[in-house]
Image (cartoon, rainbow, N blue to C red; front, side, top):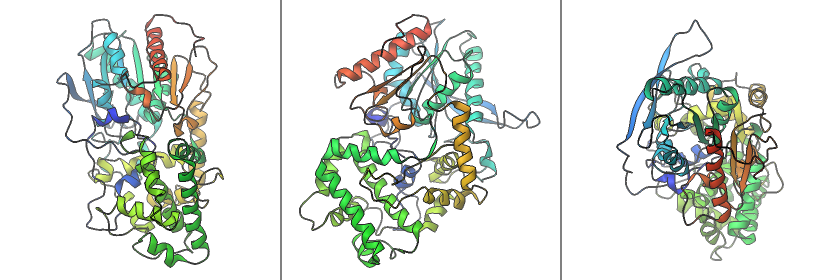
Length: 506
């Protein structure tokens, strides 16, 4: 899901404000933030002005193989990276922020702020971050056709990372024996942990936050956790109101009252109750709209603000309150709620590199990677959530095939998920020198590692913390538990650099 607002307010300081919709002149167009959310990405926080970049942060490009596993294919491409030697002392380590499913803009933040940067400064480290192949300005192919996306594989990205790190140590730092510490969040965190797993001779340790290491097709835990967060940060009344709104809409559709639902939610065309895909898309987009609103700017306190509007007694029913809220939120960018599956697919079907949904949001690329290796489809399969019961992974399977071709069947998707877990070990990677950190109300902890018995690796969950909240710099706003997490991070990194600590610390 896109609970990936993953960065917190801090990251906001580094990202650019992205357009909400694909320019098309269609006043019923789907907001880009909803499409981005559907495939596991959170929109960046809004910024009043562009952040000032540290003058010591230098941009460069590295030449890598398009296909690392075919000796007959000598094609190469360049990916973007940034480096900063402001804190580097000769003989110091290399600290790398591993790029994930996003433009490099997000990761630059960690070179100029955040807890990892602060530890790097103390240790005299050289800092660097890379842009993942196929994202931002780092494409290995002239377009994003299904054929050209075949090189978007986790294994390929790992070899990009390792060969670049070797280059930095030898050619830039001039120290081939420099120790290497990785850091990443979400998928980037998973990559960092897998790099340590596969290349322990090169990577000395990795701190990963909200690392999505367990692939799964049916990610029903996400909506369960979202519902629990509404209870905790909002109220039982809000949870019950949302429950009634979604179930009322489903019951009306089942009863053939599509005109009522279409009118209240202001859909561009009447909802076709006989089309399971359209009904599921309608319901799922409403869930994502609430998600984005409640976690906007990485501020989980927005849940209470949204709940106040959804429980306002000026509305006769919870469904009317929900519809009014959604219409008000998107009133400036659309005249009606577009539920056309065809229009939805057409946005994801654009294969051009410079399409805003690809260049800025990485939607087509992200979607391909999700459909072939990871899944993470947020369904309503669990009875312990308030968002109805109709959204199944069939919606996502149909979308994968419609965008990339009939070859991408359910069998291909399930096999991709199985192989990801088989290759990397899911929640039992038999790994050393990795610290997994998660928040107690972060839904992605369900696909991360929250307990680990290997004495050479550890996992910690910070109570009441949200998605990647622990990556921010230490501040006076941190709880005692959060401070404990951040101090643990520093101590483990020191251990990997050569200063032992007790492996029994939890």
